[in-house]
Length: 336
Ligand code: SF4
Ligand code: SF4
Image 1 (cartoon, protein in one colour):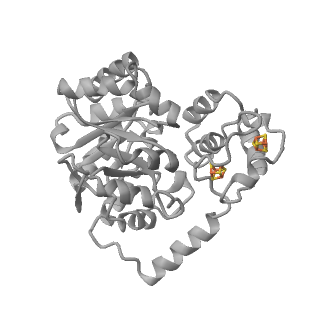
Image 2 (cartoon, rainbow, N blue to C red):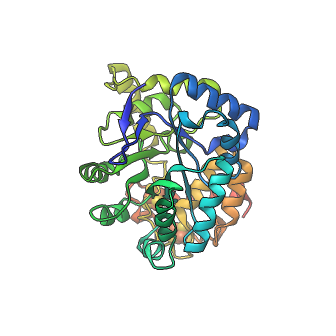
Image 3 (cartoon, rainbow, N blue to C red):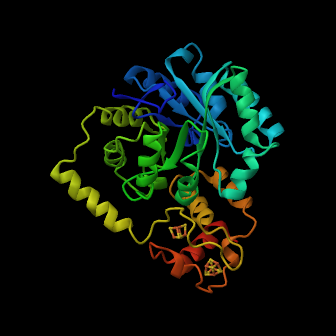
């Protein structure tokens, strides 16, 4: 399998890694099989998160006797110093290791969020201390906002950025270019756009055409998915004519009906976090992660049902999404 440098970390990761979200809906035995298959095909990079419920724990058990074969990345949404200190300890315990190669600030939403995590009582200080103590190797950040990351990329201290990128979400290409020049490793999440792209290997191939990308981390819950995705990382990413036609078709079909989580539609007049509504719906209807989706939705302060159809958001969405109609669908599936 092709390997790429993870920025300047000195880590060499397989260009196809493993995303730990979907294993929440399988059992421990299945995760043991998946990790064994990763070892067999040569995938060496695993990304998970404190927020993915059982994911870290399942992986920790499955990695027994295999820890040295993998580079581990995890992340936490903790924003405060004390909370992040605890999160790092929990991750180490769950993953059954004394060292995690990459620890990331999970989903920094906006500049206020960023200033908080970087402040004296913010989560970043806890990660710096964990690095100094030899508990983690490198510190990264994950985000969904191009504007935020573009504002930060020139002088932020992070060694990696994890960001959505796929056939239909290409808004980060300039960001990747800038980050690449600074030697920041790029990890691509959401390679199949939250399940919207049905040809996953095609999208992975597209992502790996981008030389600034270090690794793409498709979520996998089946052994044969591990094998299929690993085959893509063969160093040849030029589309055939047939693949090009299919890629164009996917882009065309999803163009006006897929939320890129860019946030340009915000603020909603009623305080609805519009992209989060669609993320929750995707977890429920496409990923079938009922428990995770329900919890995620429950955490939202204002639900889709609060939409008064004022239309303010519609003119701000650069992709012309039918937000009002989609909001009704979200209300219907979650019942509020
Ligand atoms: S149409 Fe609905 S979602 Fe859009 S701004 Fe108005 S209340 Fe918010
Ligand atoms: S609804 Fe449109 S503007 Fe809002 S986050 Fe999604 S793609 Fe961006």
